[in-house]
Image (cartoon, rainbow, N blue to C red; front, top):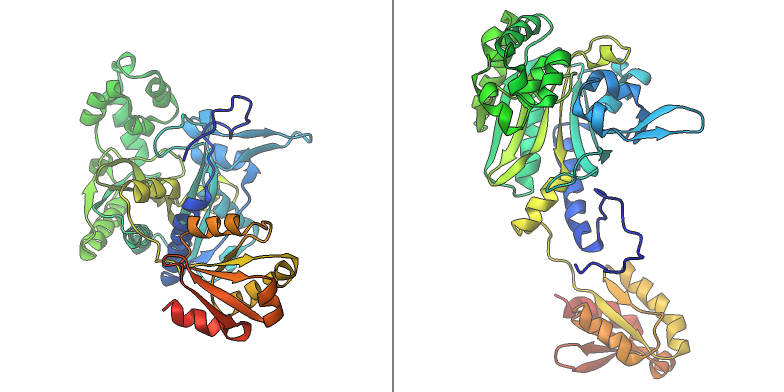
Length: 426
């Protein structure tokens, strides 16, 4: 759509975008599919505030993570509260689980959410500063690998239902508190003497959280990442058994996966399984997630087994539009009601309402008086039929049906208009 060149116009902030009327049907379809998939897998909806205490994210995500260090929107309130716009959904859902005692409900508790997230990052294809996610969380799951796979499966089914093809799942394990310290030592030993050869961010990561160097996208770091020791060869017995079960379930379900030994995800709260889902020809991940058995403990609760995943809705819209994927069922044609004169305008609203109640979509322009202007709108919205209601029709209790393609007209009694239109629109 053509953008205004008016230099005095106040535009939306950088990285924020409007969802325009012509794109709303795609968003409505995505939200419906997300709800349907959630219902199928017995997830219940939860909504959490878009504003939380910043401390909710600082420890679970990691004080040295890019999100906490560079990308959080911090709010300066009059009361001096340390608040932040939520950068992701899992921490808020976990906080709600603890705050409202949801552990007393039947476990595991399956929850899903949908809404805007906020990160102050460089806007580019598939990345915005306000972006939308749908997420699935399974909490209190006893750590069973079947739930890791069920979250992956829910994400895959949602994408498939939206006709997104050629999906591939990348999966890895990052171990637990038992086996990770030994791997951390090996990683630091490997990078010893290489510190000045990697990017500045990775030099900092080596001090704060060495695993995160594996998540670096800078070209200068890739040769070192490629040769780095891998977590899979350093797992404890329990993590090894858990990951084997995850892969067995994926194979049983014939889900196409690839083992990515360098996949770690960017938040400190993850342990064991991590995953990302891609489609061919589109670089950013469409969905991602993993297990987070320690997150509850990080925010003041007890360690609680949990696993989740989130889908980037803005990225889906980008793919749906660029691939011209048709998700929207053909809409019923709208009838256009044309009124002529004050008396006709008074009664036109009643006619519109009666037709809507009869299941007939009607478009009108009651603020316009000109017949020509109204017919022009009818033509613009490609209405197949126009209803013409003037002073004579008010007196005779009739209405004229005009075929917008042929110009042919028919006068029918008002009381029969709904039935006549239903037959004409078949």
